[in-house]
Image (cartoon, rainbow, N blue to C red; front, side):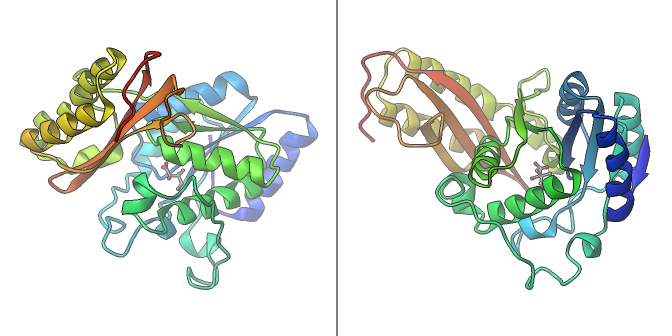
Length: 288
Ligand code: PAF
């Protein structure tokens, strides 16, 4: 695997692959890799000739009171894991390489509607930061496909809309969530949890499973979501949101059959997110 930090080197290297008509996949990451990231690389490997992973802790997507400084940086271990996973190129630019004029002066990409509410509601500006850096990476790498995890459901929806609205010829692949044996969705932020909090954390997934089962039995959405909030509080979380949306993140209607249950909750220093798909029965109470 080649590690490139420079934009010109990246462009030069990829030009050679493109001349040979090779299919290029991009896996954007912020590093501190775990099995969830490796599943993205694996999916990319299966569908392309050349796999490029990017590693960039993007300051633009962190709010002023968020964990930019604390975000785990494990470059050597990440490099070793990517090599082992069969990644061909690691692109790891510096902040000044991507934002040479600083963040304030930087042109931003805003995806309306899809990026509002849910995580966009509790993290103002977050999806502008994600959309801007991902657009930049798409421009630099010009991949045929790009792989993102389904754990960040809203992020995936925002990126699909971005690519569609800007007519980018890139296929976006959503890769299923990888979970620990106890159900906790893998995340770099799980590392913030104490031993005690880590023991509580799988209750987020368990609660979502119970709520999904109740919804699929046709129980009232309003009642189920209320029970879910209570269950999360009782387990020790501070829920940020718990919502049922249609698969495009619109409101659930009487006719909605395929829905998604989305949750974000604070547990100690970590903000955990998760989601589950729900098949709603034909007759259901949609009162909120
Ligand atoms: O999901 C992430 O790790 C980040 O939001 C991404 C897509 C790499 C953009 O910085």
